[in-house]
Length: 176
Image (cartoon, helix red, strand yellow):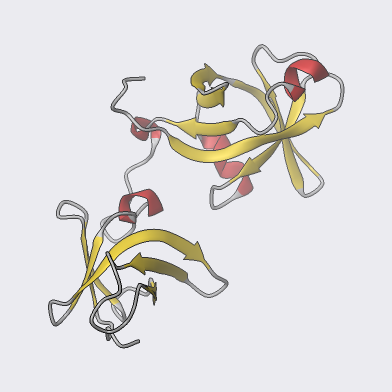
């Protein structure tokens, strides 16, 4: 992996499961099984990214467990507990024009239809009904706001996302 390439975090390894080196997996993908669509994985072990292949995985109740290449004992598995699971950006599939990876929205400037710059997207919060952009201004702006939460509802509040310009056009009142 080149030094410029930033891996995409998809989950993390949990505690060991059983005595044969299996690990519980915490996934950040839309579906639990989605993390297994990617191979190989990159694991962050002691601050370094290391490539690893998943040999087997299965659902275990509501959890998912996996067996990784080179991990054959409980002790080896325990040494990997809490390691982040990532893939390279090249492994990520291209999305349709109107869909976006959250990582691509972070850092985008948010401007409303009247040209008012509300700040930059700091994070995206998943709620039950829709995702919400957490937008932070550089300082308290003229409306006394240091941050805003804008629902990511396309055509209603989110009018245009321009990833090339790193800008999101919104129909949102700065007072709100």
